[in-house]
Length: 176
Image 1 (cartoon, one colour):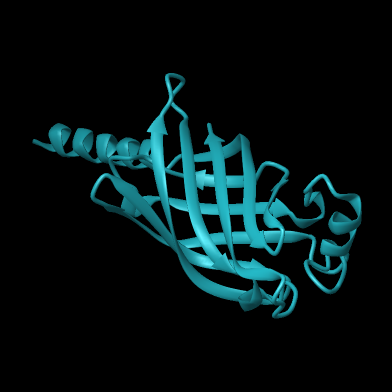
Image 2: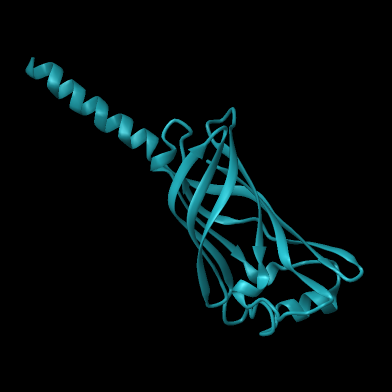
């Protein structure tokens, strides 16, 4: 009986460690689009970086700590890109990262959602980001999320009739 109890404790501890293993973001992409008077502006940031704890069998134990370098903003228009990095928009010299840190992860139907704090510039807001997770052959995961944010909520520019307020973001990260 004592042996069975000891074995059960060891197995429970090991299973908890396996499901709570921290992974690094090893690749990915960050794309965005926003409508403006001449159509749609599409752009990118460099791939996200950070850490994640995720296992589809225990989403309630998941967590994400993700950063995107704000100075990697690119739209293939050097003048616009330079302006977007200025203090009128992202102010990359003072606020180099866009940061998301989860506080809760849950499964909703066949998708997941991560609730946490999204910080841009000096503004932090609680958001819920939907995401899909696909387990890769190597045991890692491919995570994708598409969501809308209001740029004005984060002091990214000012109200302007030429530029819409809502920005659509597509984030992809591979974790191992």
